[in-house]
Each structure stands twice: as structure tokens, then as C-alpha cells.
Figure 1 (cartoon, rainbow, N blue to C red):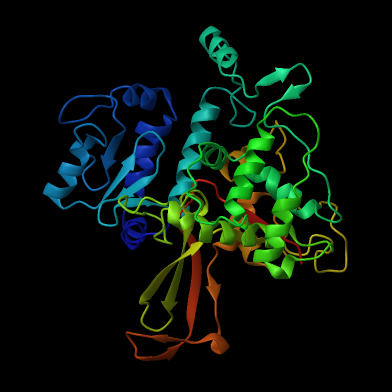
Figure 2 (cartoon, rainbow, N blue to C red; figure 1 turned 135 degrees about the vertical axis):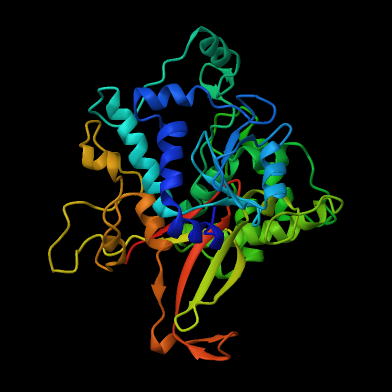
Amino acid sequence: MASCSHLTQFTKDSLSTYRKICAWFIAGSSKKTRRAKTTRKCHECGTPSNRLHACLCCVYFGCYSGLKHIHSHAKQKDHKLAVDLTYGVVYCFLCGDYAHDEVLEKILREERAKAWRSYGNKTALYEHWLPGRKDVELLKRNVKYQRVCDNSIIGLRGLINLGNTCFMNCIVQAFTHTPLLRDYFLADQHKCKKQDGTCIVCAMVSLFQEFYSGERTPHIPFKLLHLVWTNARHLAGYEQQDAHEFFIAALDVLHQYCKDDSDETIKSDNPHHCNCIIDRIFTGGLQSELKCQVCSSVSTTIDPFWDISLDLGNVLNNGNGKSNTFIASAASVPSPTLSDDYLLSCTPPESDHLDDSFVPRSLIECLKRFTRVERLGSEGKTKCNTCESYQEATKQLSMKKLPIVVCFHLKVC
């Protein structure tokens, strides 16, 4: 979800409407509001399900799926925004997509924290899940791993290190355990036009077959390594290489070879406008907004991406010459007992994310830092189409379209 100019205008004028809907029909922060929450239903057909949305202009309740009465209402009344009564996210009918706003996210978090405390809870907003009888039966029928024998599990197999090729092995292991990629390569969907054994997709098909054959002995991926050297010569040799660089090079080569396998009759919805298996799984859209500081006009571009590079900052030094006691981690886990302040604000103050010395402690904080507004300054002036001259501007990045599998590259200064 990206930002939306229509939602931005709404947050300037009508925040109280969103807060009341959150309190009464989404979070249910008191006994009175919880009773009101149980009465939610479509004003047209009376159904309580089908993803109810509430119009933010007149608080009309309508079903989003099924008969889609909220869509009909928005078209007839020319209303632009509606909030999902299950998740609290806002849908913009003019943009045709859900939009994100940090102010609304904070309000939703506050109301949910109030609702949680109204039950007498003092711990974190977390619920333990215990499987019921039907869940246990379902888990037994659909085991995660299939065993060929007691000491052999399909899909779990080691790789021999051919010199300093651990960078390749870790990416190959990630590929082989990506479900959609696994299903594609094991379903024999690749139509190879090469007969000289130089097709890297055929090598990947063979690799997947080896992984899921049930063999216990470690596999030696010598053919894949040779073809990688052939197609990406900057990775050739037995020196240690960067795993991220290999990942991008592998996707690029596989993309080139898989393009002929794509179904041209199916319309592509990814920014690469390609239906190959690589783009369907890994390609997303990165939105960049440049805002002129003189006339406030916004220029928007959307570029395809395979990965997002997130800056962890200086994790060994906090900028004052003192070492941090915390080494930045993208998977840090909060304490199970948290204060009310944490419930009301799960992230540090916004100013922390603007400070270059700030060290993010979670993936969420890394993403907030990545999507913050950046002033380009006088040295980075851009040409404004409205002013027809070079002006100072601000830049903000956001993810317009997330891929099925999103990859984050964590960088350390």
C-alpha cells in the first residue's frame, strides 16, 4: 500500500470520523462499542460478512465482495474513501487500491490498545493459539515434510561447498524452498530451445529434482556453478562472493531464459510487464514521489524491483564514539510484558527515524527509515514541470506493489 493524495486530504479535515469508526466498529474499545460492533451489516442487503466497508463521507456500510454495494454507493454518491471494518485499512475508489497513512495507523493502534486494556489485560496485545481437534487432524493429514524413510526427508538436502561457494549455496537453498518456484521447476513447465546443455533453467530443474528425490547424501551443484560463471562472469572464480549479488544475477539470468515459457495470453500485472515465473514471484513496484517545495506539485514514478536495500546504520558505533550494547537485528522480539506506552506507540518517535545516527532494531523500523521523507537540498534540485524551472524538492519512497516473495537486503555501514 502506498500513500494517496485523496487520503492525505482526508487526514487534514476528518480524522475524528475515522477515530469514531475505529472505536465503535473496528476495535470496540468499551462494552458499549462492542455491542455496536456486533450490529455491523450491509445497509443494502443486510449481510454481516463479505468484508464490510464503511464510507468515510457518510458512514454507509456496504459489502466489498459479493454484491459489492460499497462500490455502487461510492459511484452513485461520488464518495472517494471507505474503511475496511475488519482490518482498519482505507480503500480509495479513485486510485483503485488500499492506501496507507501513518496518522490513521497510529489511531487504529491506539484504539486497539484501549480495547485490549478494557478487558483488564496489562500484557502485550498477543493471543496464544492452541489447535483444536479439527486443526490437529488437518495438521496430521498435511505434514510439512514427507519422509522417504526414518532418516531421509524430501526437500532437505545439503550442498557441497566447491571452494568458497557458500554464498551460492545459501541462495540455492532459499530458491529450493520457495513453494511457487519449486512447483514450477518440478512440473516440467520449461520449454528448452537449447540442445547444448548450456541452459541454466534446465540446470535448476535438475537441481530441484535432486533436492526432492529423497536422497540423503549432499548434492554437488557443479553444473549450476559452471553455468553461473558462464552467464555472470563477474562471479567467476573460487573467491568468496556476495550472496546478494549472486541472488540478483541469478534472477536476471533465470528471467532471460524463462521469458519464452510465459503465457502471452495472460495480462501481466507486475511493473516488468512480464509473465515469466521469476517476475510473477519476485517483481514488485517501487514508487518514488518528488514534491516541489515551491508549488507543492508531486511527480510520481513507479519502477520494478527484485529486492529492497535497507540501511541498518552504524550498528557498531552510535555516532558519539560509544559502542551500542545492541547489535541491530531484523528479527528482534519484544518482551512479552510491555507497558502502556508500548501499546500506544509500537515504534520510536518519528524524529529518531530522521536522525542518521539512529540504529533500527527491527524490520519495521528499517522500513520506516526507508520510506521517510528526504530533503534533496540545493545541490539536488529537480526540474518542476509546473514551475518549469529547477527547484528544491523532497523525495519519498514507498512500495506501490508488493511481490509474492519480497526480498530485503540489510546493509551495514
